[in-house]
Amino acid sequence: MIKLKGRFSLILFFLSIVSLGWDNFYILRERMVKEQIIKRGIKDDRVIKAMLKVPRHKFVPLKWQNFSYDDTPLPIGYQQTISQPYIVALMTELLELKGEERVLEIGTGSGYQSAILAELAKGVYTIEILEQLAFKAKKVLKELGYNNIHVKIGDGFLGWPEYAPFDAIIVTCAPNEIPPPLLEQLAEGGRLVIPVGEHFQELKLVLKKEGKILTTDIIPVRFVPMLRR
Ligand code: SAH
Image 1: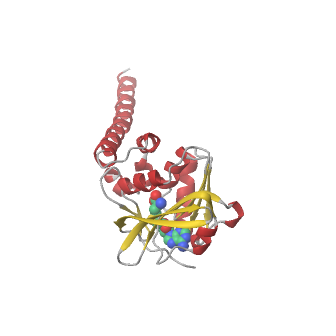
Image 2: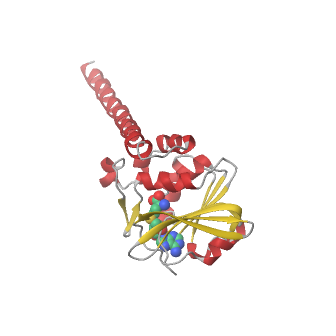
Image 3: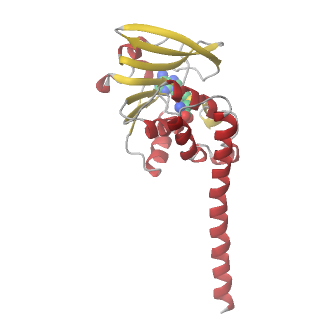
């Protein structure tokens, strides 16, 4: 009897730890959204809801998990990083997604940005140059039940012509110039968000209107470089 009781309370103890863990992350996520996202001027309600929903800690290596909701990028291995939450929100807001779009992402990394996009668009096509990161991201995204994200291993500089044109394109690594294939694969009326530069990088918003390319500088940023194969 005592033995059974002991086991029962042990189970209860672990259950409460598990549920406390969940609550803690939700509280941290809510605070992240309030302090880092809304306070800094992100207004798109759908972006805010996606940032509240996607469990960022699932995309962060275990040893960094407690910092998942901090106001900073974090290492994800192979000298790559998951972007700061505010930058993810800002870049996503700039795409003005309504729900029916096909989005191309260059630099899958952890898969976190892909999940945010998948909450807001119809289909996400994401390319990662490092095989190990692509496999990891695929696994997490599958575990979380995303079935509208297509992950490809390859050089994102070339885009993904088979699925072009894209209504929106987001690049999360920095090339020295905007890759011409990405401009070609952007749909008429489409929006492209991309960091450009080597040491000093500028986040740029590119619009394609009546075949013309219009570029606006948004803010200075710091991304990992775009690698070439
Ligand atoms: N969006 C990611 C950010 C990852 S950092 C996230 O939410 O976690 C940028 C990623 O771009 C890295 O994983 C890096 O390996 C990848 N990358 C660099 N050059 C690339 C290229 N030419 N094509 C595709 N991915 C590239």
